[in-house]
Length: 403
Image 1 (cartoon, one colour):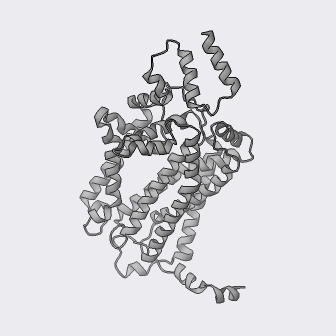
Image 2 (cartoon, rainbow, N blue to C red):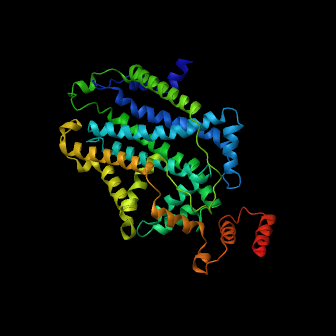
Image 3 (tube, rainbow, N blue to C red):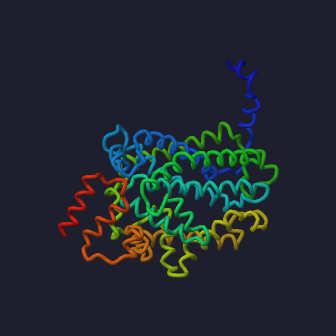
């Protein structure tokens, strides 16, 4: 069989490529990329399992998630792996980028490797944002409301982007369907395509090693297979055990089904978006666009083009004072903003966005109704007109007439 395959496939060349020696002084930090790839495959596998039971409609989404968690064999465990695996993936990808910055591995000739790595970070965050709405509970709904409102503040195309994300003027059935399509179809194709290009550059240019490697040491380290493969496999096993323990003993939260009329709800995004949530508190009114668009966009562009901005000689981070200062300030700032965002009070601008979303435009422009209950019924009809049955509509009219 081996001879049959060897005559038809370049197995010897592939084996020689795998046994290509790595640079010396390779440490555990160089396994972060493999761990990120493992988490991506884990997310794909667990997501495929969840998709068997999920229904992307406001009428059934919340019940489907409840059914997965309470009735499907191993459903709660798989959902836990998927939920906590998403957070772990963000952490691992960020640590992987920090490792590259630490050793200045983004310098020539690996600029394209870095750029595709940053794009992958954006895709990972996109997975988090699109998947957040799928449970269709209170937290998912209102956090998405805030996220879409933030997108609408972008100059020029902001309103258009927000309308495309919502699929109209309100967050509803079309929004959920579009987020589900992005989360399960578009983003997976995109991420695996970018991963393929990223891995091509990694293997083509080889490992960057550490700055202290001499030219001779870059080609005299341990081979990738079996040594580095074994270390990566051990790291994957340890990471999976940690995620499995967390999935077993820390239930994934699921709040009540989304209520678009609940304007008193205090929305909080997932922890990896909390720093942006907190940043909005410092830029109000006409300066809001600075926190919602200018700072995030400028920061991402600087990160993306870092190899072309940092022209210094390659050295470890602590021997590059400017890079060390900028990196330290950014990391500390994001951590502090994340902590403050998780413990701070309700965002004032969020109140306006929530009320604007929960009230139809016709009611805002018209006369204010003195009866609060009647107004809430009308709001429910405007937002969830696709959910109400004929009996519910007749009941709402009866309540209005009795008042």
